[in-house]
Amino acid sequence: MHQEHIAKQFDVELENVRAKVLRMGGLIEEQIESAVNALQDGNVSLARQVIETDRRINGLEVSIDEDCTHIIARRQPAAGDLRLILAIIKTITDLERIGDEAKKMARMAILLHDSDRLLQPHLPVDLRHAAHLAVQMLGHSLDAFARLDATTAAQVLRDDRDVDESFRGILRQLITFMMEDPRTISNAIDILFAAKAVERIGDHAKNMAEYVIYLVKGKDVRHTSMEEVERTVISDY
Amino acid sequence: MHQEHIAKQFDVELENVRAKVLRMGGLIEEQIESAVNALQDGNVSLARQVIETDRRINGLEVSIDEDCTHIIARRQPAAGDLRLILAIIKTITDLERIGDEAKKMARMAILLHDSDRLLQPHLPVDLRHAAHLAVQMLGHSLDAFARLDATTAAQVLRDDRDVDESFRGILRQLITFMMEDPRTISNAIDILFAAKAVERIGDHAKNMAEYVIYLVKGKDVRHTSMEEVERTVISDY
Image (cartoon, rainbow over all chains, first blue to last red; front, top):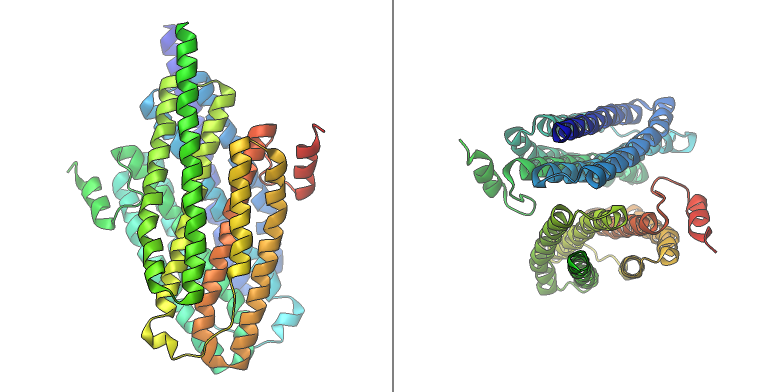
């Protein structure tokens, strides 16, 4: 009876942490969307809001980290649960760094739209498609995490290629503009950094998906090829 | 007596893990030096060696991760030791990503020195100084970790500003070259990505230093200002 009580208490604590991670993830999806909109529309007040909200994300990371440490110390979880908690600790590190990338984009929005820089030629580059792909990857990683679904996680690994391809497309576009009109170079470099931030968001979402596959399949898929990952994921079917 | 035996066994295991982390760190310092030399000297075979060695680093990460999980599951460490092990798990994630940045630089070296690209104008940009600063930061982070020395760790946080400043200097140089001769743009962008890799190495070393401060001072210094960090670190003196 006492054991059972402890077990239930443990489940409640674990469920609370998982819910907090998903809330953190939802907040970050919003941050990316807002940052790219601020950048495309030159919306400086939206950019400021993204920078301000990043504090809340940092606070969530610290708080979830503490929750996880307390759960391990007090509940001394068995191997399976322990692996889940360690995956959470790794996941929130990537989530927090996705938040940092969104903040960088917001800063870029403010930089690009301040008065001096607007005198330079305007660049018709759209990051929305790439950002949309990255947000989708992040959403799928969070779904995979919530349902411990290795199939969805494997899809995220494949989708990262689309984000990378989209980044290379933007890079080619920017190089063309710079070659045609060297006055665009400074702005183009700033937009390039923003595009790089989107690409990194995809990388972090991919890391998160790898933790889910590890958790479900008990095999470390980091540092293995896409083909091996797919063998691991379909091994049960 | 039995308790004491367990405690000793635990110390041995923990010491083994710490030694492995330092070995991994040493290997990565070498990787960064080799990658930047490959890039500057157009040494393609050195670049290939860096890419090959990265597998060993990935293997070390997976192996240390498993060691840490086993120690927690079997030894059920008390809060202080648990925090140390969790800091190790986070540290090796950053170390592995530093390794990835070195690999990216090595790939860039191969790309820049293949026959087609050599037809483009040569760019007299030197990344060695920035890379040297970043390797120094990493070395100090590893020292701080080995000795659990918060003062050295705080120094790393300050040094990150120098790496960032050095990156901005390279960026200004590259923009000047591109403006003067648009034919340099493609190569300049590749060198820019290599410089960005160096800047990110500094960021990862900074993350590692923050874990050490957290460990020693029991206060989470991530997401706090430099001034707060210094207050935390000098609070004992």
